[in-house]
Length: 233
Image (cartoon, rainbow, N blue to C red; front, side, top):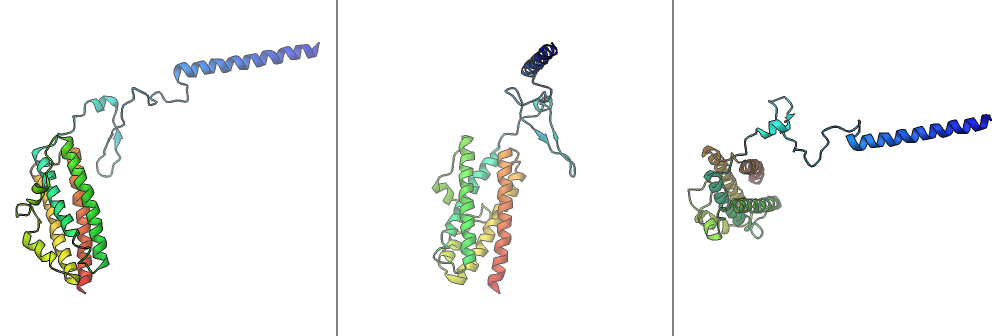
């Protein structure tokens, strides 16, 4: 008799636990569960936008309502377009200069530096051409790029400068190449300054690219100045 009552009690407990599990599962399915955040990302979730804080302070995530009130990013300007078109010509001449290094330079360091410049500026030309194409703006052709060998573009070498560079070899070439490339890079920094002075660089993409050019070429200028000092010793 006792065993019979015990078996009945165990069966009732098992049924109760099973029923509780079913109810818990239904609640989770309907309401998402107590252990899941109410704002879990889904089809209607908005992108996370962080507003930078003041110097020394952390940023904060904007709510969907605050994001909806944000103004659209500024469009590109004529100054942005001119900067990209002219910088393509500027970079093209830098590639002409680095192409002379292979059979003229003596210093392995000069060859290594020229290789880095060549790679970075080729990549940047591709970025600038894509920027112009995406905005339906003319991409300069080779004839336009080579037309930039004049005083209107900072740092550009004259035909006479290029002739001197082609006519040198060995240590003389190394020093002249570094001297002219430093001047060329400084010209690119001036062009970035001119971009912002003309009201350009407000569009996020053009601003980001101009800042990257400024930072990269400033670093390369310091490297070339240090190398030029070592070669002079």
